[in-house]
Length: 104
Image (cartoon, helix red, strand yellow):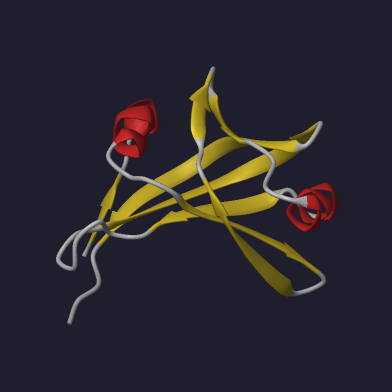
């Protein structure tokens, strides 16, 4: 089961989740790092995700943020976007978001 998230509602949705994962890729290899995304203007800032993630974003700006459910019966939040590197940070412009619940 999935429910689209209006991007205008994304800051409120993020407030309900804790730390998630920033997924980046380069040369077909996906890298996942623990991350906390902060709403900022029309985007999301992930402070200092690490050199590997920053290098991946520089090579391939397509990223996903994954926030696992907070309870076993809860929903995951997935946010797709396009990212840029700003210093040691990654700034993401969301292109879509969905709440997803795995079906048992």
